[in-house]
Length: 398
Image 1 (cartoon, rainbow, N blue to C red):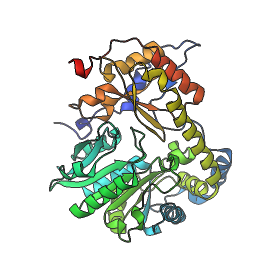
Image 2: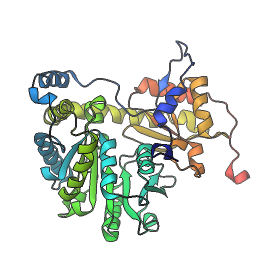
Image 3: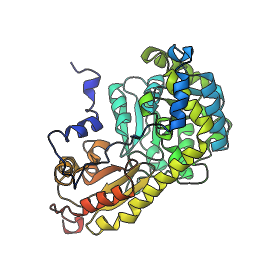
Image 4: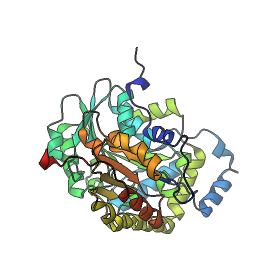
């Protein structure tokens, strides 16, 4: 008998960390870890001080509302409305224990055994894992060389069992920012076919565009189709406090409430108070964080010539991620541990973001660059350029 957890693969980041076991790194070539998109620095000092103050409040240590603190729901809805030039009400917001839980709650609320959810590939592996464990089929939607999904191609994949299309923008793992017209096309497709459009915007605070990334909330009835997911972890360095959000229709949130009450009862009170303080006080600080991420993104482009000459190709770059195609004969699954051993680089292979039968993953790597400064990015590309592994046979010569 197969359990729910046995239907899916091991957590990729944890698997990759095991490649470090027994490996030592010389002083002149320390490990460059580009495997995970999580801030390693603590929250800024003023936020930590606010969190210390919150610890003195008796209510911080008690159960709170299952769908989150009313003040946080109200503040997020107000800022969401402003950011997207639309309307989001507090009763359309739920706070969750991280964005992964937000996705899990939504899938549980809208799907049952043998239902289907369309995921563009390369996909975010935790989305695939939850679908596996829920008995829901992940239907792969290939994105091609630009990593942008196509709504017309998605239409051909919709069946009577399809319940949703799930997009991530800015994308994990590809880094690409989906054009507004792409999101509008998927929204229209979902509404026409009676399914949900899930848009995970965990990395929206690091979008390079000065204008709103889409206008979906300007539709007066957006919540009949759209489900937006968000994370406070990346914006305010609150990864360990697990605070995320869902923005959608109140009747659906009533179903989500059942899941959340059963799994965690309520989100962390301390994390929620930190998120609220951050929303109200850290606008300028967050703008500086965004500028730094955009500079690191620029550094990826600046140093690509070092490896482009060796046959590498940059497929996507944005927010926390660069997605690379390598030129070598072996699969990225075999090469990833060798990167650790030979040049001290820990990166995830594309095989962790694609279906088993998809050959594209074998040619790809994800680089999570948010914790690597410009000097580190230059060192990363210098090390990649030094690789002298056997090259794949060119397609034209096959």
